[in-house]
Length: 113
Length: 111
Image (cartoon, rainbow over all chains, first blue to last red; front, side):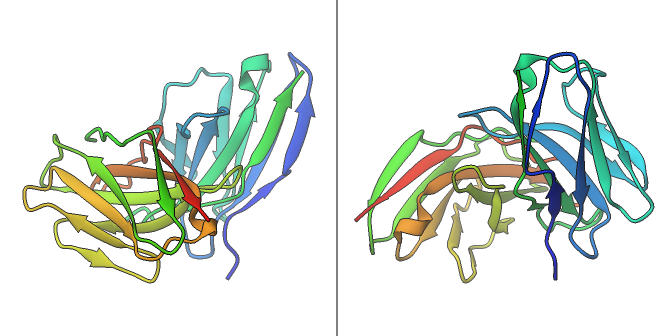
């Protein structure tokens, strides 16, 4: 049973560019959440997708947007990249109902230069 | 969701029990306590969760005080591979709400 898969694993972008990160959830999960983790910090919640809609959002600007597809996979898009967007981006999948925890992927390391 | 307070760092001798405390004095009756850990540069890994009863699984035990204002994660026989940052999180039951991660406890297991 595959867990959460994220791609790419590493990425280098230039300031002002746009980036798309991808996530395939664990089999059977219907909800995808995205987190940003700066060096030395805990993960910060960006947003959560369920039934192809953004259900919850953290304190992130509109430059951060996402999408969920009918197969529950998800994309995170970041426009107009800033140096401060350099971080590990984590995707987590879960079930919308119940109290089971999240299953996290290994993340995408984004470096903005 | 209630906030949690954890020590910044702890050491534990290999083979001994590691006891990681967490304070969640403002927890509500419908909030679960979850523990995750994160080994360097990997995604967080679920360990255990509970509501008010003590819980045990193959990884750890979770002891929640009777008033639910604090809890302790116990790794019974710590190994070097248990060196990680441990996060204690509370979340309202049956909401699917996001997990709020603090800065966690950095546990170092010493040979």
